[in-house]
Image 1 (tube, rainbow, N blue to C red):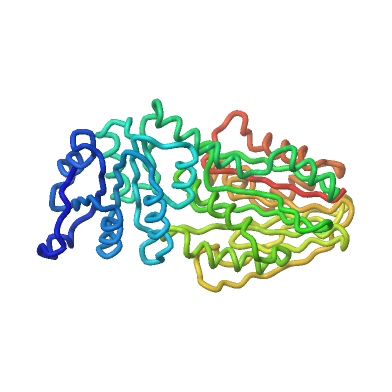
Image 2 (cartoon, rainbow, N blue to C red; image 1 turned 120 degrees about the horizontal axis):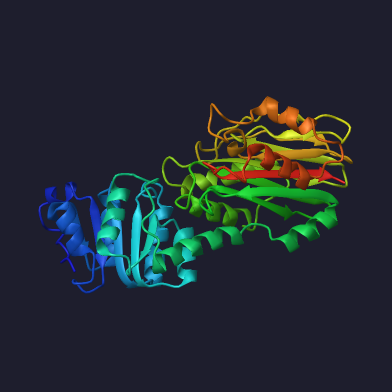
Length: 394
């Protein structure tokens, strides 16, 4: 374990420090020696006090915080939340390595914004390699070898991200109650990533649906979907006004997301009693909408800043009739970027033509299967996460 440095030492010694390390493990088993050997003593500050480590890192940013611990304690959650709640420090990457950790603890760390969580069974050299990746800002760096517990952690992350999506039983109840045909084609390139969708009853006659797409893809952006899902189920805000919902989410994501992160989102409210849909978009791919089975699909262009990008951003709510046979199609950019441009299968115009070429009685499941077939997704790999959410009034 590294010895803590006194605050009375020469301040210049700290200015170039890049790594702030807290460890409660035996020196022979901890990361301290390997980090010092790799990066140099002058670039590392060691602490035996967790709160002092985080406080000093917040004062002497930019830096990287490494917590090398026996077990995940409530104090770690408190300090991580403290860091993420400070807008000036929310971007500081935090790597946590633990000897013992439960699935619930892992889920909480990811939700609170830990940049990387690894088990102590991972070889020190591989852990130091992950430190180097974070220091170099390599968010999309190749995944470390998936062996033993490390693979189990990755699988747990995937399971958690899928657990916040609507399950088949809940979706079936909602479809029956609101007499809506709803189907979503959801494919994450790494098993989980930056896409999210959900359906949320407001009352007996109104249903909210949304799709969101965070910049980036893969497991390193998956925590953002957990943050958004948690926000969407917060109490105390009106879910019936789409533009107000996007403004509310925007202001909160600005405080939660790391610097440079943002999201595109489409939010719609279906009022089956009034026969109307109201929707609002934030930098989202332009949705397709039609008034009935007998009328063609058309593109509705979206405006609005990405969520988390601009304080106090305002968004527009669009209202359209939504009677029998009406439809709305929301999708992420992978639909028009697969294969990667310039070889992509669809753009907005050709997507509209394709949908209008299908029979009037096409269900949303059939529409999604047709789009999946047109993209040849049974034979090619996605380069990004894909969400296609279709809603049709029965």
